[in-house]
Image 1 (cartoon, one colour):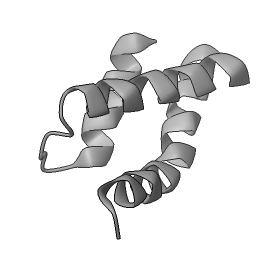
Image 2 (tube, rainbow, N blue to C red; image 1 turned 45 degrees about the vertical axis):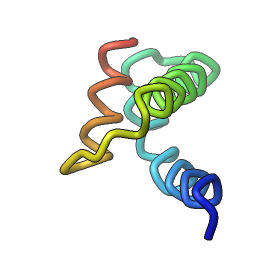
Image 3 (spheres, rainbow, N blue to C red; image 1 turned 180 degrees about the horizontal axis):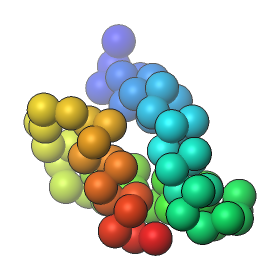
Length: 66
């Protein structure tokens, strides 16, 4: 699988959880979607760093952006 295919699969796997976190923080579906997308872009812009828990890493980004 290509690198972009792997990234897409990972995004699709983590998106529902991150959306639920962002929605609980904002109360707005559109704001939650924006936060999830912004968090993913920041992760990719950072060079997709290797982390122990990607879910925890992305959750931290979402919570700091909220």
